[in-house]
Length: 343
Image (cartoon, rainbow, N blue to C red):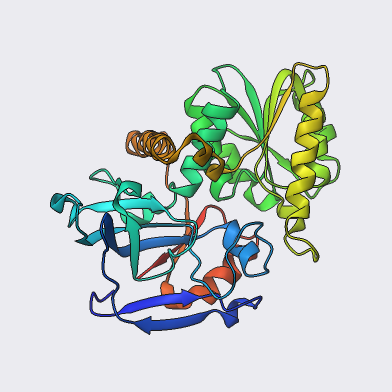
């Protein structure tokens, strides 16, 4: 994409994918402590699917530029930024703003992408990789020999979760529609068809004593079943409410209900634990600690990618200006891995 002009995607309100707008303008400048990153890859995550429906619980007011994460090359650096950063390929978690040819980011928030990792490959493991790593190793604290259940094992976060868990010596049961089962078996996952009926009963057959951890992005009834599938000392990590994506009403209510259930379960006299995972909750540690932890975890994920423990799951690559097609494809439920947007 040209360095001569800004191209960005604007979400003007609650619209169908075709209602996303392409806006052009001047390339932004880097302020003190900032860099301008020339985008090489960004992605479509479930968050943007919720945002276009006005369903992401803390999205900014319309209109805004979506895009949860971005990979690109530092084009310019502002005052106080190490000049050597210019020309470096970096990744960043931005929550919004990534669907643009040029993205202004605080220099302290960018993480260098190791040599040998392409931009699209790196993009598949930024928000997905940090989420998977922190849920596995900071919340569930998985250990070799354990068994876990990953809902949506073919998805963006799910596919990274599966691979990181297996790299840790963990057995994985994964839910997915039947079309993805052969690919999951090839990865060593025991697949369960979530459309075939009682998922909980099938998982109990596979793990009669319960599973050591469940990673549930579905919410609703699923998260209740997930709690019931835990072994003693097991951990439930809920990290979304995909089942409510097309609901109407309060966008906060599904999250409030999840938080209430987590609080209640943890108050019960049992050895199991439940968490509602929100990657941004780590900011309560303080900005510097949050950034240090995020940098450390993404560095671990990039290292796993370089070792081959994780393979980049690129479902499709489309140009930024074809974002409507990318959104439709992501929402179709027919693909495995991450939809990547390129310049």
